[in-house]
Length: 225
Image 1 (cartoon, helix red, strand yellow):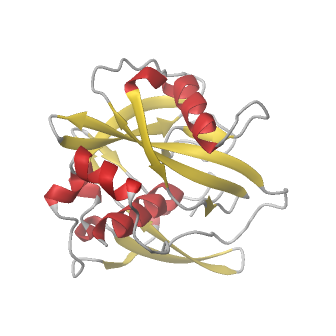
Image 2 (cartoon, helix red, strand yellow; image 1 turned 180 degrees about the horizontal axis):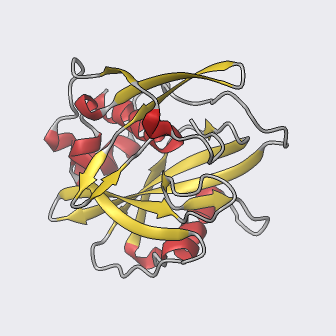
């Protein structure tokens, strides 16, 4: 779920945690297994795909890159912390990505361009292995998540206007639903439900939630099948 930046999701109580669900097996989280899964995807449908709309603007297409960094076969998910001064979703944890440009030939091109613009991720270090079903945010973006393996030799250069920080979370942590927490709140006359996946990154508490957490949950479903 995405909502205006004045909303503080970390203050909303947790109603449940999915301790009862199995984690994705370690062998399914290796790069070769991921390539095979996206090459031969199972029949499935995502649990999280559309948020209650709070924007009156027309829908717009966008893409995000889900970058899986290959750390000696221990994959990590590369995420960003948005800057605090942005007009929307300020300070939130997000995948690199953004709105499609007319020059982009497809969703993959948008994701790669945005990742290079936001964090300096050179496409030569990126191996796109597939895409996930679209996720429509409350701000009326129809987002295509593009999944890619990233070679660890990449050097990041953050765009200070958009990105305050970049960090990595073990994929195994995010693919374990014991770390998936459910929240429910009444917001502007609608009952809204979302997930959070908090991660302690050294001295930093990374509050992964909303659209980012929803796409990660969909990836969990896709890999568990």
